[in-house]
Length: 256
Image (cartoon, rainbow, N blue to C red; front, side):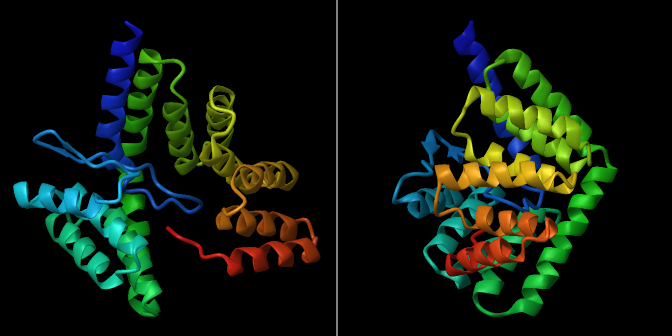
């Protein structure tokens, strides 16, 4: 019974991932989508993902998700022109794909074309606002609640529902879900990072600093954690520590 629930919960995550790709995540990496076609599965840890996504596109030229994921692989390899090309194709297939605009903006920024980058980021933000007005967030929250009923130990479902509450400015509910995700998975970096940013939005800078410090303990190369902790120190008036964290983040490279 439990195994079945877990499989059903995983199915909900894959369905809901398309919704999450429309959200501009301001403080971390999005969940990785598994692209399936004819039994082909792209492993986020594999070295030949580009070949897998390319084969998926060959079999299904209208597979927006495959273009999205291949663009991220190109981005990670520093092949920004190819990343831009794939994002542009994803946008052609789905003009309302906010995440494709966001990622294309990141690639443009790497090439130094900040004007095009800003235009794409602005477009991503406007699309996210449209989805909120259409009640997409409420539908996602209901779906994640169903996933949690199927598997109460599913940390990912709590984390993603918490993020959705955050997008609705329901910060207390957001913190509750992030906290539960951390209880279930004590080394859950993304949940700490997102809870920290939510505390920051509530002006609870001490708790934000605690969460970002924990992120850094778990992953000392997390540039976003240094950057956001620096923001919290700055709000507290601790300019020295803020500058140290900003410098540390700048020395690293902030990836999307």
